Amino acid sequence: MNLFRKDLLQAGPPADISVPRKKNMMCLNESVLDPFQAIDEAFQQTMQEVHLNRYFSQVTGELKRLLVDYVGHGVSKDNLLWGNGADDMLFACFLAVRENNAAFAVSLAPSYFDYSTYSRAAGLGIKFIDYLPDFDFDEKKYLEVLNSPDCRLGILCNPNNPTGHLLNDEKILHILENTKKPVLLDETYFEFSGKTMVDRVADFSHLIVVRSFSKSFSAAGLRFGYLVSQPQNVEEIRKVQTIFNTSIMVQAFVMTMLLNKDVFLRHTAAAVALKQQLYKDMLEIDGIKTLPSATNFLTFTAGERSADLFEFLKQNDIAIRDVGAHPLLAKHLRVSVGSPEQNHYFIDTLKRFLS
Ligand SMILES: Cc1ncc(COP(=O)(O)O)c(C=O)c1O
Image (cartoon, rainbow, N blue to C red; front, side):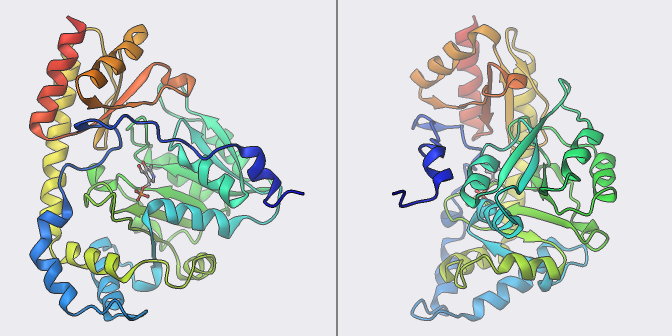
C-alpha cells in the first residue's frame, strides 16, 4: 500500500540544488550585503516591542502599511498577501488553482527551475513552451495552451531567470488581454530592472504579481515574498495558506528593512552598476559569450570549455551555477554579481583559464 500520493512516489527525490560551497558564492543570485548587519540596531529596537509569545502582533499592520507604501501604484493592503519567499507564493498559487488531476500550468522555458518543483508538489501539471533562439516567444502558441480547457495558470518570469532577459511589455499585455485565466507574473528581480506590471493589477482581474525580498532586499535566508493581485484573488489564495504562515520575527525584520529601505535600494543600485561593469569586462574576454541581463546575474558560455571552466572556477574557490539543462542554454553557466573584489577575482580567474 502506498502511504503517500502516487505522483509523489513517481517524482523521485526532491530537486537537488547542486551548487558547490565555496568562499565566493556567486551561484544563487544572492546579495553580498548581510541585512542583519545592515540594520542590526534598528532591528533590536523593533524587537523590544515585539512579543514572540503571542500569535498576533501589531507588527503585521505596520508591515502592511509600509509594504503598501513601498509597492505604490495605488495598491492597497487588500491587494497584498505575503509568505515565506516568492517560492511560497508560487506554491500557494499552484495549490489555489489546482482544480483536479488534469489541471496544469504553462510556462516559457528555460525559466525558473522550481516552477516544476512546486507545481509537482501541489499536484498541478506543468507544460513548457520553449523560447525562440533569440529569447523572444510565440505569444499565439502560449495563449493557445493557456486558453485550453485544463490549463489553470499562465506563468511569466520577468526578468527571466536563468537568461536574465526582459519580456516585451506589449506581449505581456497581449496575453493579459486575450485570456481570462490567472497569469502569474514573477517579478522576483524587479528592483534590478525597474520594470513592473503592478500598476496594471487594477486593470486585469486575473493578474497576480509575485515579488521577493531575497534579491534586492538581500534577505534570501530570511524567507519573505509577497504577491499583488485584486482582493478577490488574494482572498482565494489565502485559503491555502496556514493561518500563521509568516513568523512575527520575519515580519518584524522586514518591517525594519522597509523603515530603512534606502540602505537596500542604494545597495541595489550599486549591484546594478557592478553588474554592468562585470558585463562589460566579460564582453571583452575572447572565448566566452555573455547574455545581456536585467537582473543581478549574468549567463554566459565558453562553448565546449564550459564544463572545464566550471571546474576551474570551483578549484579557485568560486561557485557559479550550471544552467545548461535546457537545449537553448546548452553549455551555459550563470554568475551572480558579487562584491567589487569578488567580481575582479572572477574576471581574473576567467582570463587565467582562457589564456
Ligand atoms: C525567478 C525566481 N522566482 C522565485 C524565486 C524564489 O525566491 P525566494 O527566495 O523569494 O523564494 C527565485 C529565486 O532565485 C527566482 O529566481
